Amino acid sequence: LPQRLASLAAAAQEETWQSRQQLQVQQQEMARLQEELSRARQDGERWASALQRAQREALEREATRGAEQARQQELIRDMKERLLELLREKDALWQKTEGIDTPMPSPVPRDPGLCARCHKDFRLLSRRYSCRWALGAVGMAPAQHRDGSALITCSLSRLCQGRVCHTCSVDMGKHGRCCLICYQQRHPQAT
Image 1 (tube, rainbow, N blue to C red):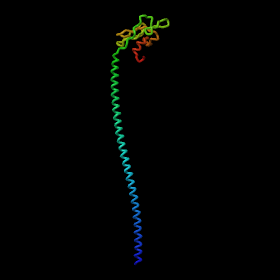
Image 2: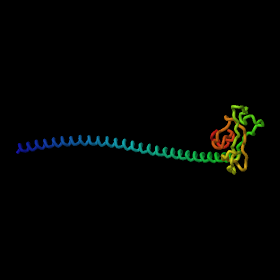
Image 3: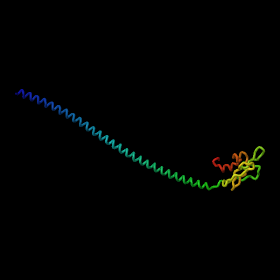
Image 4: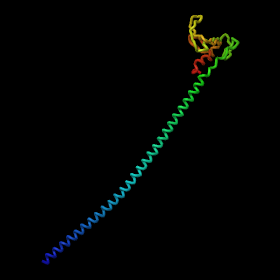
């Protein structure tokens, strides 16, 4: 019996030692897991603070973007208002200039031997032309020329009849030639 008790005691001691070893291993594993948990919590806190910072920056960017968009819309509104003002001013100036009469052509010089525009002396090689352009634009009516060609005359005004040289006149096709002053009055875009 003492041998049996001794073997049982030895087996119990061995079991106790193994249990202590397992307990020690488990305690080490638990310490390692607690350390990993602590590190994970720290990482989680770091990520949470980074997320909060990113959300705050996104909100700030959105607020600045909204403010910038509001400024741009206000600028666009101001520019549209200014454009409308300028268009109204332009229309007012245009209406004022519409009322201004265009200057009449210079009177025909008394000497019929000189060009009405450049005062060049008519000679054998410089031909004189009579301006065939009507001074007014109201009441245009066709009339017959001596040679049978149609000539547009104005019932409310008379022809310029200025004597001009070839250089100071413009060819009007079937209607003959007219002086530059009359042509420029009728065709301001040509000046």
